[in-house]
Length: 122
Image (tube, rainbow, N blue to C red):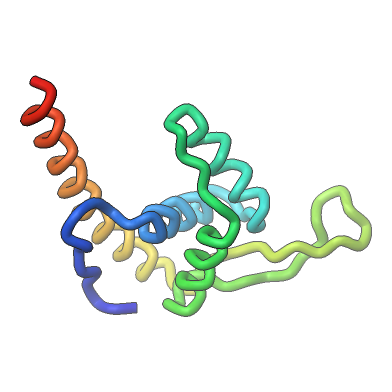
């Protein structure tokens, strides 16, 4: 992981957005990929955002490559034989640093959107 994320210049990129939520969801509880995807889709349904399977897994794999998360295979709750991959922190300090960097990008993106609304719809 680079020490400091470089802003994209416009709005926050989807993968960075997903990585932020993946870190927060991992802080709150251990989940596996499809459960994470279902929860994100449900949470963002009112906003018309539906993250896709491949982008979510790319974000998870980035977090693994960056040394933030690791995979742990466990039996799925209520299933005798089915295993799922859960995610947990390898380096929580890196995760917190990433969230701080994304907060700055979200604030910048919010300011861009607010300016566009003021300039075009006021």
